[in-house]
Length: 179
Image (cartoon, rainbow, N blue to C red):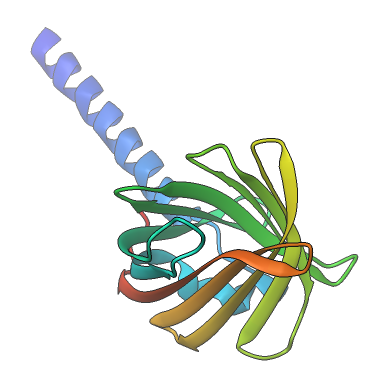
């Protein structure tokens, strides 16, 4: 009788665990409203980032992996990782102001924040501020959707109206998985 009770208890626990696991899968959030147009980003991407020579820094080509996932409150999270660099960011749509917003930080301690009006096209531009080593600079990020499996992201930092740093990432979707 003890064996039967033990087996019955284990089966109930397994059934409840399976039910909880299936409800977790079913509760994966979906993007809605303006954010739904960015659903194509969710997944894993392979990126090649070109950074031209600036000052004493040589030109570089960096291979990276970028992952996009859905956060609560209709927000997208992003993690970009390569051998020499990594960053994390979040972005979304602020309906009350009709603006896209983005903020994040990188492995070198730089932080950035920006906003942009909706372009109504496959090209979106956000401008804002990049902070690094106590210095603030204007930033401009232009993202162009080429297809549901490809985009180009061009990032610039401007000081006194001059571009002092820039990089262009060309990314190709490799999976719909987010982790």
